[in-house]
Every structure is written in C-alpha cells, then in structure tokens.
Amino acid sequence: MTYAPSERQRERFAYRRRQAIRSVLLAAGSTAVVGTLLVLGVTGSPGWPRVKQSFFNLTVAREYFPAVLEGFWLNVRLFVVCAPLALALGLLIAVLRTLRGPVTFPVRVLAAGYTYSYRGLPLIIAIYLFAFGIPGLRLQGTPDVVVLGGAAIVITYGAYLAEVFRAGIESVHPSQVAAARSLGLSYRQAMRHVVLPQAVRRVTPPLLNDIVALQKDVGLISLAGPIDAIRAAQIGVAKSGNFTPYVVAAVLFILLALPLIAITDRVTLRAARAQNAGA
Image (cartoon, rainbow, N blue to C red):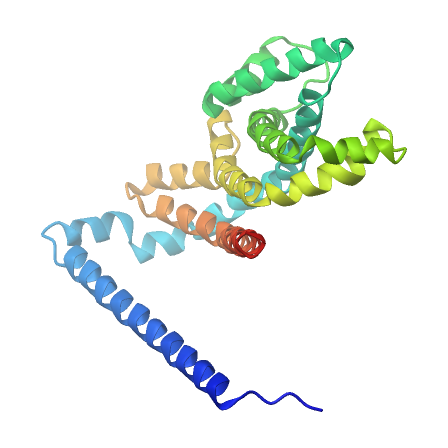
C-alpha cells in the first residue's frame, strides 16, 4: 500500500510552499533595495571619485595582483599547517586541564597558566617575541622567522581552542564517565570513546569560528618580515602611492574564508536544529 497524502495535507504543503516562495521574494527584494541604496549613497558621495582612485584602481590592481597572490600562497600554507597544530595543542591542553587527582595538580596548574597567559597576550606581541626574541638568543638550529611566527600563532590560538574543548568536555555529564568506568573502561578509554566524541561534536561551531579567525590572523606574519600577501601589498602601496594592493589582499583573504564561514554557518544551523529537536 503506497502512501498518499490527504487533501488537507496537500493543502498544508501548498501553503508552506507559497509561504517559502513569498519569504524568498521578500528577502531578495529588500536585499536589492538596501544594496541599491548603499551603492547610490557611496558612489554619490562627494569624495567617492578620490576614494575610487585610491582604493579601487583597476590598473594598480592588475599590476600588483601577481605579487600579492604569490605572497598569499605563504598565508595559505601557514593556515594549512597552523590550524591542525592549534587544534591538536588545544585538545591536549584541555585534556590536561580536566585531569583529576592530586598527583596531576602541577600539570593542571601549568596548563591553566598557559591558557591564562596566551589568552591575555596580544597575538602581535607573541609574534614579535617569537620572531625577534628567540633569534636574539643566538642558539644553534633556530628556525627562520616564518616557522617562529607560525609557532606564535599556533601557541596563541591553542590557548583559545583549549578553553573551547574544555567547555565541551565539562558539558558531558559525569554519570557517563561513571557508567563507562563501571563497564570496565579505564579513564583514558572513557575519555577517548565516550567523552571526547561528544565534546568535540558539541563545540564544533565555536571551534570553526576560531579557525576562521586564525585564517585571518595568519596575515600578521608580515610583522615578522616574510613577504606574504600583506607585506606584498604594503610594498605595492609604497611603490604606487595607492591603497589598491591592500584591497586586492583583502579580497583574497575573504575568498579563502568564505568556504570556512559557509561550513561554520551550516554546522551551527544543524546543531541548533538538533538541539531544538531534542528539546
């Protein structure tokens, strides 16, 4: 026997479809009106010709786009390396902070001191300390400033991510750990198979938000001297006397962030729907 919706059910579906179409049309119309007003307001302002010449000069953009793009490749590589390392460091610190027992007290204190320190330390200062302070020690085998700057980014963001992971771990009810231990699992096995999977799933949206912020802040590596997108744009501005290379670098960063932002929004929406369904 095949399912056939009733007449009333078909009317409900048709009503919801009409409401959805109406909402989409209203959203598109209001967006078009607001966008048009913004464009007219900006382009109609007295200083728009000068701003357009200084920030949106296509000739300057075409001239310096290859150099900015070449520097942007360094930012991409930094992000690809720093993001997983910061996640791993954050997870490790979070687990250390949630250890129980008097024997592990020194470990908890060190982990807490690390998170307190690097959450309060501005990333710019951390990059300066790593990129210029460590080479000043004149130790053998000191890596170059790109590696040191990347280490500063990983350690700083590791502190933020550790607190996000810790919030997820502590959101799991202790009775689940007790149940896992009663089944014969060790504390490490209970964390690995019971606590961490739930904790990571619960804090995935804020984790992704921090990763998006990290993707943007890899541009601060230019403070240490390497020619990334920001430094290449700065050189272009110095040569041309025009700010358009900065806009080119900004567009590249936005294009890199868009997929991550879309994934973050989608995961956040799914988490909200799951929470509402369970409520």
